[in-house]
Length: 306
Image (cartoon, rainbow, N blue to C red):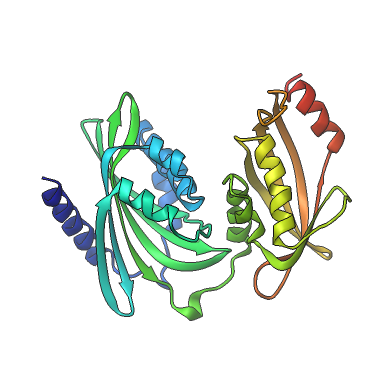
């Protein structure tokens, strides 16, 4: 039965890919997508929110969070263009997770350009997500993601996951500062401190509130780890990027609950920014972080609402 399901699913993937074509250099219909968003049903909005949470967890290789969104015995299908030849692979989700554990991991960011959603009887959904996979602000592949979701106890969960991946030509791999900033924010939510430091050059530095600079990726990882340990549910979101004469200002909002070792259990929400110097390789050479330390300490002791 599983082989039949897998074979049918691969046929569905390949036929969808043939119909989709290659979108390089084309207008990605952002205006039409915005109009569609206004007409979304509540189920469609819930499905999109679920997929986008999943893609963040996947880009951070947060296997625990991914597993919570997937039903037991789900399957994964992969269709990838490699050296001009299409390669396919299928596996149970458990096998995919085990493979991830044995790989050298690098964060990725995969924003969806457009969704096509079909819902049957309010309990089964078929979704095609047109996306671009980025690494440190540079597009790497054009992905067509296919998801089958089923409603389980009022929550949408994944029954099957598959994608096609077509590499972006070298001359179209252009650094995107906005994507870089969003990717950096996502890495701060990963509980993987090394993911944050990979956005820096090997000898890059991070300074927090005029303190002693953390120089090099190992030291930057320690700074990130200190926040991730203190706030296991840490969320960093990018508010804006501002280009100034002194560099690029990355404005952020940090939220989390201080439940780490010796934590107060209080919730914190604080705003700040980092002033970046970015090198020619698209990595941060120097970052000077600033936030209201007094307000931060107050919230750690008393909570954001007190």
